[in-house]
Image (cartoon, rainbow, N blue to C red):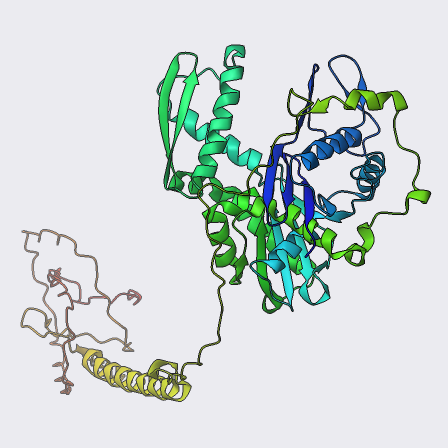
Length: 543
């Protein structure tokens, strides 16, 4: 393969790679030799409002980015071809603005532009390798957000749908969470809002970023805290980093799942998850992706350089692979944007204060290299033999058992009711009354016949005898018998003898359980001269 150089544009970092030889990564900050520095110009590319420097001069963001790429290209060994990758979530106007600015730079006017999603997949396909068929989803964990791109491996890893940008998981937010964790471990109150702590907090934030990167390969990191009134060391572990990442990582996995569903991708069609960017180094990110989607997670030892490496590989292959992002012919190119006098201003723009010397190429060496995650192969195991259904899941057995239980319960209930009715049915009381011309005698059979309860027969001559039902009267104190004895009356003729009462047969009575005993009604004394007639309840008095 012909030697080539790849350049990548990121919101927080710019990278240059001489494929197979050396790599350089610089923050997206450009400093003039005698003037102010420019920051945040990557996100301003395509903005018609220019950047205003401290000296009052105005500069277009794409022109500042072009000058930064020129200085970065000079920092690596020269190669035959140069390719440049831009963020995949950029709009067309931003890509066109950068292409027009590159046309004004002699070193970069022939450099093709590629989407960093395509170049990252190209680098991963080259090493360690990607499946040749199926759907591959690329997750680019950047400094200001995470990009999701769904690609078709059989079609040269072309995107199936537009790139989705998720801003709730980024390197800057992780740095802020680590900084909050460190400040919580500082003893005493820390005035983070004071102006005197601005410089110290900036240095502490950089130390937290270094600790985050250190925790990608170590279990513990120490952060030096140097704030007004506080100077100490705060220890932070990987478990604590995983704890602060849990919530934003869960939200990102939900967004990734939703993106696949909206793209019409079924779980069986997903053959791999590609992970690039600085956040791909975090072990918790790789573990969460593998656990959620049950697919191999493919990354590389330097995932933050994947886009630049892929740009160099595609530039070496020639214009056949440029696709829709290829450079247009120079004859049709519009005139460079900006004032011609402005070009002299950028001649002194560089990261170094010494503009005459070009820094030596940095060796392509990475401290504490982390081996890539081994490729996971999922094989379909033998289907386990179907276990017989347990007895409680067999409907016929359940129905038979239930019917037997119900039948036994019904039989038991019928037997119980019959025995209860036989034991609790009281014998009926029989009252016999005879209506004759002769005097009649009423006879009743009490439930518990005692000598005291049987009243003496009363003899009278009513015209009619009535049968009534006795009710228990309210117990009352009997009146005191009169002590005066009236004079007996003499009758001229003796009354006819009372006929003897007819015998009655009393039916045997079965005493029910727990029947209270009715108290005995005391006899009413006989008043001389009046017949001993005791009216029954409900019976009219004789006239």
